[in-house]
Length: 626
Image (cartoon, rainbow, N blue to C red; front, side):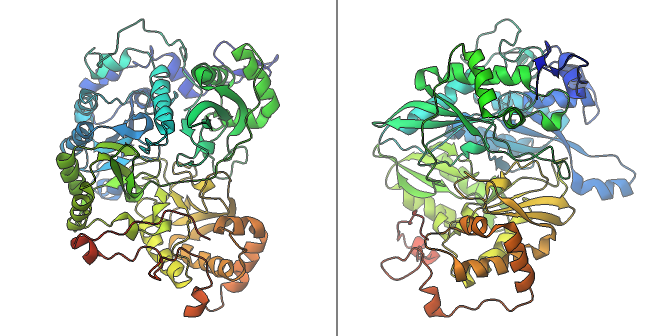
């Protein structure tokens, strides 16, 4: 546990101070994030040296390698093929049609002709070359978006429920607060404008002294993630945030927030001092005081976070090691007064916001399911072209969800037919044709772009879901809400440790399988089986799903069932059932399995593609049935 703090925020004791991590030294010598980036941009090499590689993250870009090209390049006597990921910071996932089209243009001009909607409501471009890096970042700023602070040891993109529900004003309050926090907590260094924009400020920005009043000379010990949510809709996974703000609503107005601190999914295989952790309720703050309370938590982290071991540098380890009461006591000192107790509220809903939905102001929005957030054209599936046509023609405002989907907003009532016909024309499935498991799924990019990945993820999950959907349909579970999340390493970017089924890259084509989370995001799962080959994942899950059908209790979700039985019983069940024949259910047995039954006797939405072509529409049932 920390005792006192050095001027740089490093925990210390009376005998010796811990050695700083190398990244801390890089930040200290960077001259407020400048390093030698400007000089290296003039260098003809295709990459930056290590110290600039670390600083580039603060500017919103990661230096990466095309790992698919390794073998052939090595065979041909060539070195690594370096490229860059560029990430836009988009508070609450809100952007205009013009901004989206500008990013899409940049993807075609400088990147790999795809966009990736992120699990933090941003947009990433992949495959950008060093020679095009400055033009790409400048182009993003030209459309009044930014990459500054999208990565690095600062506050990352501030998340909020993106749904344009305007019937009560609560969602608008939430989204406005996300925008305010993003502006208040952005880095102040002028290095970004000097390097990428030739000193030009963005609209409404004013040049000031080159100091960091909040972050100081060495910024934060690690990244810091903030998200705002409503109890009835935890679509941004508020408990996974370093600092979550759970709104307290009275009379259709947000009166304040429960401050939740200490969420984080990252861990390291084999290092038991690292682990996923859910944010804990610390206090309640009135809406008028939320900005000062957030800044206080950040200053506490800046001063007391671990700057020696980056694997333990997240604020979750302070909350875990100190305990909630000590954290409250220390935070009270930063706020110069006692803390109010958190209100007794919990999350109770999770809406993916898909399909055709009223906004409450006479307009409509349409949520399009984007598998793993990848917007691309590939053979007969041409999502990128479909979106471009729709956005050019309808000029909607847009929202990115935390499930990596896209909402077309502020639409007239007659837009639904055009949207669905366009999606059909370009080979894109309508939301009602996407299974619940796929709707709630996520995967990180992993190989070939992420240097941390040890296994496939984005390219592997679709095939796994194809297999899983067959089994779910056989068992009558195709309408169950079931979250499946996959990552190529244990850092947990797709938040796999909260999901019903979490798949985490372990070694090559082998994965750790976690069970027992919940699609509401309010519970961690547990390790069920380790080192499972990718091709055996579904077969390992089938006996558990079959037993769930046999013995589940009324209203029991799959994650609840797994928690009730526990890891040991599920492992024993898996061992005894693996060699037995699959459970075969008779048609009359399927009728006993609770599920959404429509008035016409069909499960779910019986609409077909021919219906869409003829302009027929059936409203999707969004409720959770068990």
